[in-house]
Length: 401
Image 1: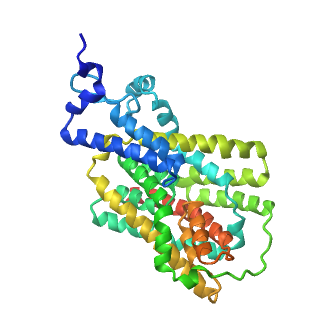
Image 2 (image 1 turned 180 degrees about the vertical axis):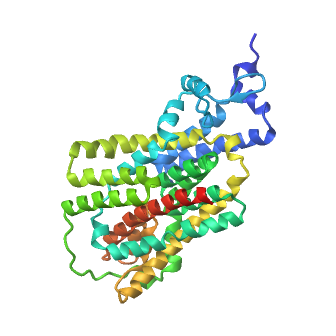
């Protein structure tokens, strides 16, 4: 006869592991449920948070006995590298094929970047190149300054660099870099990054209000007549920039190519590809990205003592990047003879198009007739490129140290 513990192993496994693991499993189950709630309410990004929350609660609830002393799940084994073991796991863990063939090799990050490229209009960047570049460089302050802070907090160089890249506010970039630099920490780093990026909607508006006085937040920008950027010019830019950046930064070439092929397809007007990438590819990749991040949040993985450090560093990185971006907005304000709105600086943090929307919302809040979205989108697009450049530099230089 089966006893209840054998029949309902999800319950009995709570008593077969260390108490701290059992307690943390319970915490993560409730955190997952709460993420679904916040996603459904649109407090956090629902496209990521709903599948992530469901996955997180399910993987920590659905633990079973593999032997008398070994417990696990039928979801995924991220640390499996042995060929024989991998072939076995591929036939047992139902999400293992998706993880192995799209996640661990960064394909899913590249697909998301391709989708970002398709929905990105680089014309704003080409219309205001100097302004966009200056703001984007300043908005990388968190990515640059968090690295020495992470080293002082005890992280080894690779882990410190992976944590610092959270400051780019670019989810696929964080996933891409952490898998290369610190694969043992990519789960907490990436989960923390996506949680924090969802919270930028809530946090960055207050940072803008704190650092930019009310009379400047509603300031109109007197636009000079600019050249109308054509699709052909955007296509030429995509081809040239893609080639040049891949030559200079081959470590980030997969992401760079993915972004610019999206831009090239958009500007070439290839409608079937645009629809395929923008809807099927982008939504499917986003869904599985959220789901896989959720099921990778097992209690044993998240209990790494370095996770608390990464939580702190993620906040520091995004805060410094936001401050740096607004500082860049002030620089352009003074360089342009005060004909600029410093709020645009927050858009240099490349959480596209979130930060550009935040900038326009905060400006509209003070002056409904002030429209700065074109400048903001230029800074955001440039932020994506500067993030890729810095990520490639970290990936190239850190292993040499």
